[in-house]
Image (cartoon, rainbow, N blue to C red; front, side, top):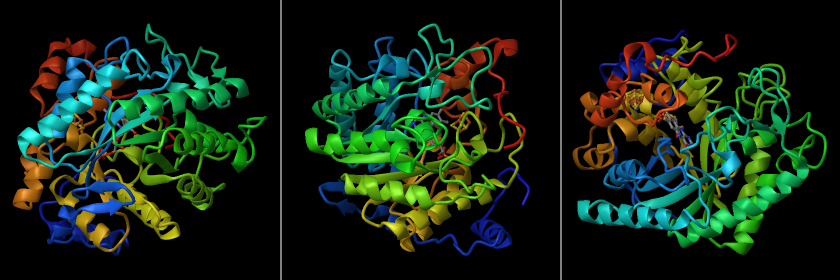
Amino acid sequence: MEHKVFAYKTLDDLTDNLKAIGQTLRPVTDLSVLAKPISFGSIQMDNRIAFQAMEGCDGEVSGAPSELTRRRYRRFAASGAAFQYIEATAVVPTGRANPLQLTINEQTAPAFAEMVKEMRAVAKEKGVCDPFIAIQLTHSGRYSKAPDRSPAPVVAWPDPERDPKGVTPHVITDEELDALENAYVAAAKLAKQAGVDCVDIKCCHGYLLNELSGARLRPGQYGGSFENRTRLINNVTRRIREEVEIPMMVRLNIHDEYPFPYGFGVDEQDFRKPDLTEPKKLVDILIGNGVSIIDCTAGNPYYNPHVNRPFDTAGYVPPVSQLEQLMKHLNTVREMKEHNPNAVYIASMFTWLRQFAPHLAAAAIKDGWFDMAGWGRQSFAYPDFPHELLENGQMDPKKCCMACSKCTDLMRTGNVTGCVLRDKYYTDLYQSIPAEKRPKPTKDLREKV
Ligand SMILES: Cc1cc2nc3c(=O)[nH]c(=O)nc-3n(C[C@H](O)[C@H](O)[C@H](O)COP(=O)(O)O)c2cc1C
Ligand code: SF4
């Protein structure tokens, strides 16, 4: 079905559209399941609402959270969402996607500890649940930038389609990958000292660990076979369990929707069709290594954002309806949980559905498709929605994210980011940029998506 901008007036409209695209899931009006606590091993969470990792590109040059970063996390902490992230945080300086990306090391760790303390204090003061806080550890791989913001790509293997023009990417060596394993373990130790509840190993969205999982053309011990392609994440999770003893999670691309031989979780002939054979094998390994939460996601925000974050407006018209894209994601999460239910599964991409998202999320959680529902952009636009929803049983459509992609545009053009439509700080920032210099919708998207 072709893309149409969000126009549902009622839950019945959504139900009709679900029927039209051949889906059997139906939104429900009883949302009580979203308020149910969940426990898994040592993990306790007060409800089923997760705030996904959302980078603000606003750290200090050192990689420590700035006052603007802390403002975002105070807003998140006051939300009542049981699960919250500290966004993508680099484990080495050369793995930063922008010069202000958060980075954890001996120097910056105390500032992370302060921020975590502040989050817990804000939640307490507001009278909402104490959030379960995960920090997302990452290496930005082919999207890494030098301190002057010029591209400094570190790739698993060259890919003419995605390599930046005019720059020769550095193919990370096996020795450098061996050393990176130590960097992840060191970062996890520091994160534990900073007081987070969990470390997330980011393996999604085209960043290094995700790219490695599709590095079929790469020679050596980190490429070719499935075992080699997943060696780093396997080793990192195993060592964190042995050496750090902190709950672990993985934000995992279930399918890249990127062509073979580079794409992970895709059909060899038709990359738009997920093939979950390898993602299932990977999840078995991760769970075997002690990973307790699988936060499912898909696609690549630089290449096919309609797969990663359903939208109404961006640099191109999505090739399929965004409800279909969302349902493709939810169905893959369901298949993963059915395959190996021994973890907490979080599904992503609920923002585009605005005020109707909780109704679809509740239906899927009730039916056992996954355990928690995750919102990304909605946390920027409407951070108060979890406690409002839990108290009043509804979200206010006037406060919802409009899937306009302006926060992504700000980010891609080297600015700090937040919600341009709903958060005055970023509205003012956007308007202060002269019209001719305002971020334009990202142009580097391919025709073939
Ligand atoms: C501005 C911006 C920053 C993001 N930062 C991160 C990040 O740090 N880590 C991550 O895994 N995903 C990141 N994402 C992706 C979101 O976590 C989420 O998966 C995506 O927005 C889809 O969910 P939604 O439809 O609820 O927004 C970011 C998305 C946006 C728009
Ligand atoms: S700028 Fe605001 S309304 Fe637009 S997509 Fe981002 S969070 Fe949503």
